[in-house]
Length: 366
Image (cartoon, rainbow, N blue to C red):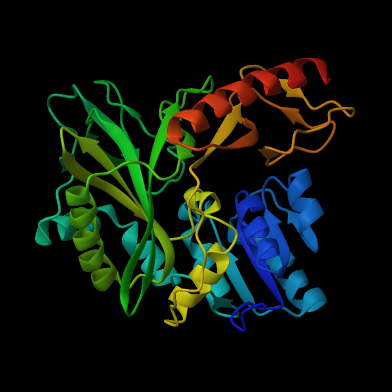
């Protein structure tokens, strides 16, 4: 029986809304989507999907009004992409009930000066951060004040100026933890290992993929849980969130908190929307089933300009599928791959095999 917490229909807004649309549909909730890509599988699953040129308020205001008028919706869930457009969330909040962190909290977590100062106050380790250009630029990264998916992160060079901050580069395992936050505390959903790619378009640390159920020592799990208790209390986070961190020589260094549903949510089963709703309404119970099977999600970026052939039949393990005839420029995402397996090694083997199959399909259409 469907939970009473799940609305009949929701508005979803994200740069790529497919994952959130899938989560809604899997939970028995109809969905109207506003996103930048409006991929074919998003269009197939959603009651209606609106494509917009960006998530800036000026670009979505008329569409949001149309959704309200046509569909009579009053509640929404947001995903990635609003980091760059904080004013959009503030405008939405005036007339919609946001299921997730408020606009103020979302922006507060992104205030880098405050965030790293708060980590210091709470004795939570992080890579060294400075807000004026370091004299020795070796092993420093330039990071934008606001961003998602690794966009805008690059190595620091002597001749560069940036409207952002500098963070010391740390070699190690790039990790994240998915968690549900409520007034009652923090529930750890799962630890993940993630990786980046260097794109042809000049991006050096683009988010490329993530694998669930990463092995992390009990000591690290306890330490992370303690840090999240402090941070959730400090920021009053609600719903599904994630925290990125580096694991190096047995020590953790916090990078950032994503104060919205992150890509890893799709790797933990079909009931994560309910988990999000429960945490936001502080009605958490143990009825939500989480997947115990390791799985991975990878974005496939175009190595050259690709035209999506009309005859192409997408494998079931692909997602975020562009529409027939679409032209994907070099460095842009073509689609995503989702792989499963009995263990992380098998998952990654399957992922690599699927990559080879997909490359052939995109080349030949067969």
